[in-house]
Amino acid sequence: MSLTEKIPFLDLITPHQQLEPELTAVFHKVLRTAGFVGGPMVENFEREFAAFSDAKYCVALSSGTDAVRFALTAAGVQPGDIVITVPHTFIATTEAISQAGARPDFVDIDEQTYTMDVAKLREYLERECYVDRDTGRPYHRKYRAPVTAVVPVHIYGQCADMDPILELARRYNMIVVEDACQAHGAEYFSEKENRWKKAGSMGHAAAFSFYPGKNLGACGEAGAATTNSEAITRQMRMLRDHGQAKKYYHDIEGYNGRMDAVQAGILSVKLQHLADWNESRRERARKYNELFAAADANIILPKEPSRSKAVYHLFVVQVENREAVQAELAKQNIDTGIHYPVPLHLQKAYSNFGYGPGDFPVCENAAKRILSLPMFPGLTEADQVRVVEALVRSAQNTRRQDVLAV
Ligand SMILES: *Cc1c(COP(=O)(O)O)cnc(C)c1O
Image 1 (cartoon, protein in one colour):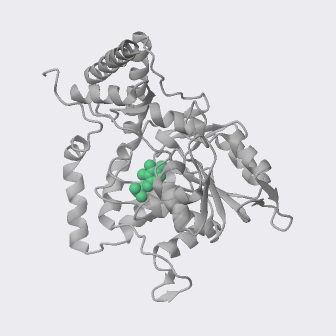
Image 2 (cartoon, rainbow, N blue to C red):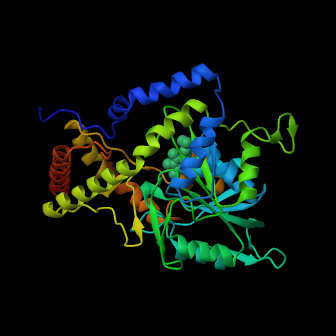
Image 3 (cartoon, helix red, strand yellow):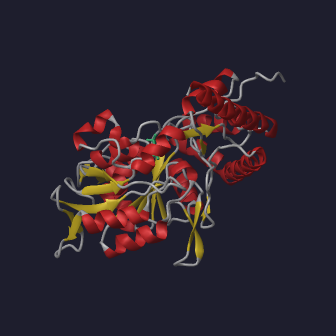
């Protein structure tokens, strides 16, 4: 192997080659039954994924974005409501909130974990809202609207600090929808219940994405929502299917948000490997940490608190001179990513919200320095060594150039 051989950011080819006979068998089965949308394969996957996530119900959908949207609507978010999330997430989180008719608003993230800062959430509720006597819900003074839901994002595969979020939600009568689109199988230790809980089993409902690059990915677009509530399940099943529980009898106006049978069958095949794949990711994270610790460089590593078992959808470090470091790694044929370079409150799409630089400083500071390293179950130790050596060297070099330039 030459030293300049490419290290990909993720490898979507190998696992599909390994599973090709089983995956093509799914396609043949669907062709022969012509049950292309919904049906027994979808129901089967729903049962399996609910069990995997320790949730009572799973509703298979066409994307993670729809999962967030349907979960919010089914749990009771109304047009005009405010839904709180973080600015450090993929825009799908806030798109779904807007598409549910609500207004997304933000609280900053925790510096260590990149997930919602619970103290900031409490502050938001206490300072910017008063409690409406009739509903027991917070009412935003400036926007003159009720705050009805919170969407914590289990970013990079690590659960947000759910105990205090759920506690605030109970106190303020708010809905909690977990954005677990990056966190299939992640676990959180609830002090309150003294047990580990799975992502997708903690809020009123939760959203998962099976976009190909996620820890569990379809061969196309797919998503799902989980919940322990029968009523929310019923509502989400209607929303995904044009608002009908019985064909052509439409109780509400819904959407076309169902999952294809082919994708469900493929996801069932791959779900059998997900626990192993997640464990491989955790092993690779441990290896990265070990290699970086030995290198003693000025690189901030991901933090995994004792309450968390993260599934490392992404392995994100922080470096000075991120652009230079990333370019240097690219020169050495090492692919990296930035998740995400522009915080949502500074996106052009949300300029109407009136936020500016400095409003969510923890997120903004992270956005300038974060770098996602190659992370996937088949990543070899030799490649990890090469990534770490290249990163440490270029972090030192770019710093030296900085000093020379002064
Ligand atoms: C991928 C992702 C989504 C959206 O999922 P799609 O299936 O692409 O619609 C939502 N939120 C987060 C945090 C994601 O990473």
